[in-house]
Image (cartoon, rainbow, N blue to C red; front, side, top):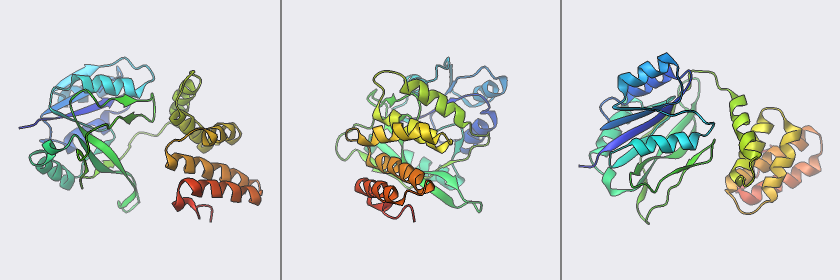
Length: 270
């Protein structure tokens, strides 16, 4: 019977979120690996209460390094990952138990819908597919210090999407300055990725540092092939700048560029 580990990294202020997550997944996993990146007593106490494998990682401004360290501690045949401010609703917990005991071993990568934000009435507002379970064969590693992603190389037919929702529900206030600090540090590093350029420009723009964001975003857009959704998103932000400036002919230029990357952006400024 294949086994399933849950890997979680947790940091400052996460005690209540981590406890909620752990309560929501009771009875699902064969192994719970919690990697603590903070000396906060409250966080460590919660982690000790639930972890079957508790480990500590000295924070170094790199989420991928922390996640890869956490993955490396797992002994199970498959690894699932969740953030400490995620949780499973009871119906999704039941579905995951059924899936684990049924079809899980057929696939190397399992995608699940992620309810990233919800409306006031509790209905999903933004749902994104995310990789959630991977085979534990040391081929799936995390990349990028922030806005990290998991490599998903696997044979044809070995990736699937299942109808098991993961819900995001942050309790502690979001700190956009943290993301900007980490992104700026990576952006200044020679050889940074195009993905870093996009997220750095996006975070600058969204935090109100628009004039700093524009050259970063335009440089990213004019660079080589990259994820089309990100290219379109960068174009829309540039178009928004020109809309606010009243330069409507330039709005049309950037709107057209956005739609060249993704047709659904065609009317995004209307």
